[in-house]
Image (cartoon, rainbow, N blue to C red; front, side, top):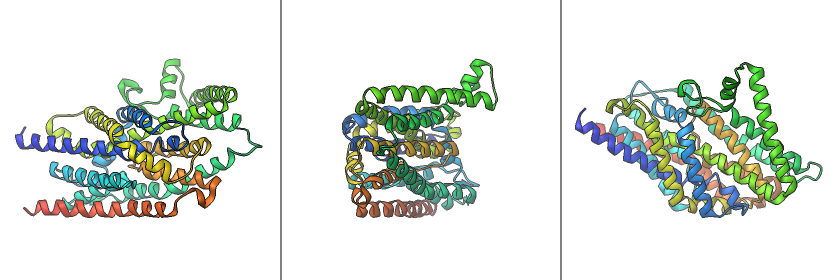
Length: 393
């Protein structure tokens, strides 16, 4: 193994750690608990601590799909060289750092995806239009679907004819069913990824659609019963605990999705340096997200929780349910997605359901959307231009 290759890999690894820290300090670390902080269910510093722990867990157990997509699924015909990986990560992380400093949630997925595609094109890669169409569809539908679901939930929760002792357990049951059927690392046969329901089927010696439906229904009933009991005996405390549980699940999902943006570009280099398993880099990325959440997330949490909408516990729950569902769909599809886009859209939808136009800041929203679109174009240009300049020497 050439010493120069090892040195470049180490530099790329440091760039990946920097990217992980930026993700933890920005999108992954701030957005999951911003609604809970806005609802005064948890303090900013405690939220940053909790989100770091769950982000690390999500990175290790659910990070492989998006990592593979970012590392090998964005450009065809080439494998990013070490110099290209370094350029892509520093471009993405640099733009994210600007967002953290200014308080505007620049979309991590947009910056990293744009930078990787730009670098790949500069090194002779071919566009993968089918993947771009899938990614673009998710990006475009996220504000509509997430904001729409949040608006619908927030519109129902305050109604007197729909008691919360029924609606909150129903929402919790939905989340429980999804959680029981998504894949986690090491739960499948031979240490491969698998779901909780699939594990239950193997332990019970049953299989098929009926068995999956029965186990999923059992999880839904158990979760709904627990939440029903808790909300009925202590409504305010029960709502707070549901809100914190949802925030933790969204933080977990953020780790599973966002770690791929930090370590995915490293995957093509692993075999070059004799590493065949991505588990080590996933763990390293998760630790970077953890540290970023603890040290840099409070600023962005404050920005999101106070500037985008006036939230209470019910509207916060309405924002976090679709955030969790969309995040898990993105992990399943292996699509890099921005948690800023997911949660901000849901916050806006839930806030508008009750407070109308007065519940959100139109100027802040306009600037944020502009930052999302501009960050993709700028990262592509910087990635392509930087790699082209390097190749000319």
